[in-house]
Every structure is written in structure tokens, then in C-alpha cells.
Length: 187
Image 1 (tube, one colour):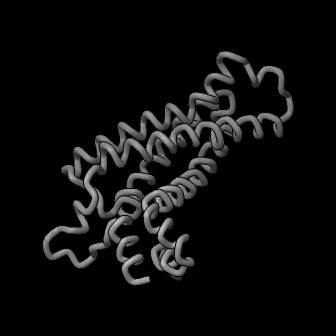
Image 2 (spheres, helix red, strand yellow; image 1 turned 135 degrees about the horizontal axis):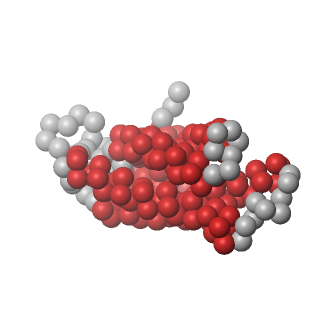
Image 3 (tube, one colour; image 1 turned 90 degrees about the vertical axis):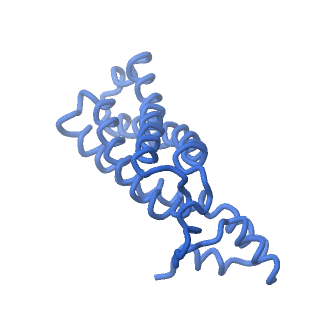
């Protein structure tokens, strides 16, 4: 199965250069999509069973579990060449930033349930599921995704090539900007 990097390099000229420049964002979005599905499965498993009357608690539990998966995938794949911090400091920053992200993702659901009592008027399970999906996985995830991408690059993984450019490293990948420049030079 081809890697995302090889797929990006197969794109036509200008699109390839744009994708190379934004490889981290593309990988971050793929990790986000993967963890969103994971989060969704956990959330609905809890909110439709044992935590049915407490959807915000179900969202926070699913968000924390998805965050742990996200750390592993982001550190080892999306931001694999970034670093600049000791691992424990990096992990603390990642989980702090992600904690703010979990709160941002749960905020629309909290506002709808606690300020507007949105569940009170709906007896239809289908309507509740649709409302939860829109509030959690569209509005909430858009808020947290924008915040987390910015904050992770700025604070948790601030230095490009901190891990990839280490002396003697055999798995060095050029930064997206370096790869784009290289592509322009060879095209």
C-alpha cells in the first residue's frame, strides 16, 4: 500500500508542490479523521448505554481516549520530524493542548444541553443523534482542530527537523518547504 508521501509525489505539478508544503496539515487531518471515528464509536457506545443521561461525560471520556491515540499517531507520523523538547515536556504540552481541545469540542454540546435544554424537547432518538453529531463532530471538532494544529506546531513540536535531522539519522525526511523547493528545482 502506498504511503501518503508517495501519493503526494504522484500529484500533478502545482498541486504536488502545494500538497508537499502542507504535508503536516494533510497528515494531521488524516490522524484527526481516524481519531474522530474512534471518538465517535466510543461516544455513541457510552451515550446510548450507560451514560445516556450524561452525554457531556460520555464526550469527555471519548475525547480523552481519542487524545491518547492522537498523541501516538501525531508524534510518530504527522509531526515525526518535529520536536525540540524532551519527551516528557512534549507529552505534557500535547496533553495540555489536547485537554483544551477536548473542552472546545465538548463546549457546543454543553451550551446546547445546559443553556438551551436542547434534549428536553426531543423525544426522537434520531433527532438527538443528529444534534449530538452536529454539535460534537462538526462544530466541536472544527473548533478543536484549528486550535490544536496551531498550538501543537507552536508549542509541543516547535522545531522542524528536530528528530529527522539528528546526526546519523537514516529516516530523515525533508521539511515540506525543502521538499517543495527540491521538486521545483527538478521539475
